[in-house]
Amino acid sequence: MEVIKREPLTLTIEDADETILPAEWERIEGPGADDYPGFQIRDDDVADWAVQKIAAARAEYARLRELADREIDRITEKLTAAKRRMEADTDYLTARLADYASTVTPSKVTKTGSTYKLLHGTLRHRTGGLDYQRDEAELLRWLQDTGRADLIKLKASPDWSGLKKQIAVLADGTAVIEATGEVVDGVTVERKPDEFSVEVD
Image 1 (cartoon, helix red, strand yellow):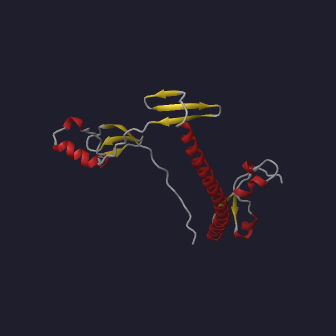
Image 2: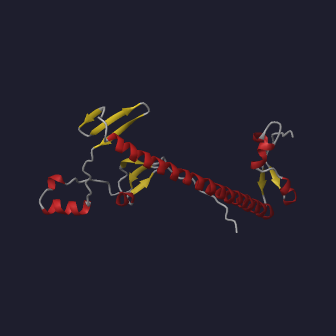
Image 3: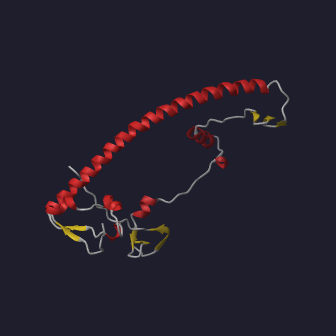
């Protein structure tokens, strides 16, 4: 179908269901969707029709999403079973390789472990280290009680909630102290656009 570029049309309830919506534009032949004029809503009848179309579009998406979720669940179950098999096989063979590695002379020995090279991989043994589990609050209290302030880090941070109450924003987005007009360094302000949404009953 050949589409002629023109101004948006005023849509009436009588021809609403014949209207081409954006999701259908890709099926337009000829010049393409960019040339389709769209339409303007001018009365409550058409506005309510548009709300119903939104509800129908959301319902169709929800139906397809539910279908997809069931398929995803089936695929996930298969993948989970495959992972279990892989982990069982890998754990078993890793244990057998660890037993074997203990019977051969390593290719390389370092302070932290040893390695034994094979054609398709390397058997690596790392010497266990120390793992410190810390209770930060209790440790901090101990350092304070024992006079070890040299081992306590102090972190300064801006009191943003307090400062924000004193800030005014100029038309160009500059943040200033409202009482003095002093520009606040380190603060940039972007105005968020208004939002419009449709609630479907």
